[in-house]
Image (cartoon, rainbow, N blue to C red; front, side, top):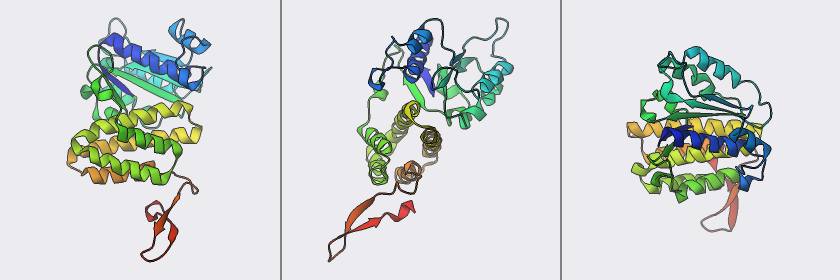
Length: 270
């Protein structure tokens, strides 16, 4: 995830909040609690599963690529204490070589990995980096921006994804088309961020699937720049979000012209 906008302190605070939510030992609705051992470590002496790359050496303007590669390697080492391993990276101190060094772990991260890139302006990052990350924008004050207000159609897609219901995913994705092409990019931002929030509580296979879904969302979001219609994008999104297992294709009653309802599996899922 890229956290952009706001002040440097606000971006770091938001990154710590996300890390605490992922590692917190309390019940899901109370995360982050600020009281459990994981929260106390993170906000105190430091948590073993949270890595930071925030400031370059004193004699350097940019973070050396060797430091970025070292952190990248550490992300492939399983967590010591928690369910996740989290990297908080100041992307403003990464030159193009440093950003390129992160591409492999951004594109195919371990299921337990969470990477948080902090940037004043996400637009200055390489397109290959932006396309692999969800985006969370902070206003200058560091609070919650108007763009972060929940979009009901996006919440419906997330609910259908949690339920793993193919029919509901199909209906919710096509309902996104109604918000208009101009608003679709922001909706996809919110959808990618919502899927990312589901990863900490997911099992291994589901976490990998959610990671693939985020990549697909970013690819179709980029397609908006090439005048691909909202209908095409929402249809492709429905296919990307559809259950990947054989028993996940629900049936829905379809009424024949002159007969009783009958059950039929949607052909697009075959």
